[in-house]
Length: 42
Image (cartoon, rainbow, N blue to C red; front, side):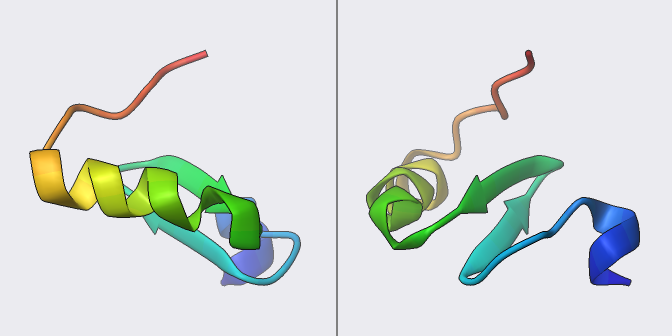
């Protein structure tokens, strides 16, 4: 399942289709959860 979702390392979290990968991205994940902002799209 992880590979199909595009997860390729740890820690990895997917929120609303946006991948947060790496310990240094946990603050960004926390912000996304707290504000309810829409996911960034590339």
